Length: 248
Image 1 (cartoon, rainbow, N blue to C red):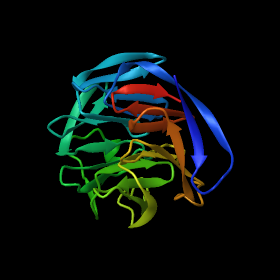
Image 2 (image 1 turned 120 degrees about the vertical axis):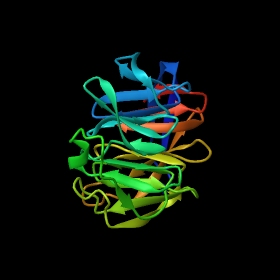
Image 3 (image 1 turned 45 degrees about the vertical axis):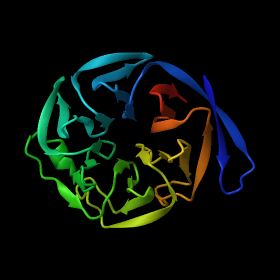
Image 4 (image 1 turned 90 degrees about the horizontal axis):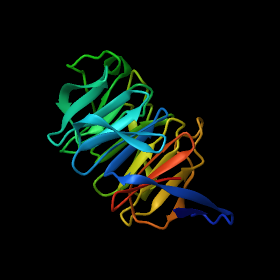
């Protein structure tokens, strides 16, 4: 068991402790969305969390994602898969990281940090030949949620993509957001959580439909060094640098 202590960086006096309980098992990466939690081990095995138990899904992946766009993943060769009718369907394209958290559209980045997305009609078609849309810029991690898409680049700079829509997933332009993170995840409700190079966890405050970029970052003091976070429906999932999983 660990405790998270929330401390607003901009001088707020109030703080609150959040109880975090360890989930049995070790996972390298995890994603939560649409009421589901999926994860991969360091050996590539894929699992879904059902209550407090990990149930294996056949296949080998290095990154997995679940959300309104369904269940997707990429393997060690960067091949892209979509889970259809209880089986993995390989689709064309190569990505390092993929995110299914948008309103039934998908975003991701490749080895060269090039940015791509799939509009809603492509995601729902179950076709294997897909019309990827290129997005200008370079990112190492890209995620979408209720109020838009966010990413971080090789310098750990944070960006928000404006005017992203299910049928126009490219958006129009980038807006730089204060702070430095190595990864971040956007939830269906627009919440944004991320991790910096020291393994510290942050939450973006003030996000609303009218202000999708929010106002400031709050620091969540975790007793463990963190590699990865994901948030869904009131629960923050934390992956530590030694592959332990906590549900907060």
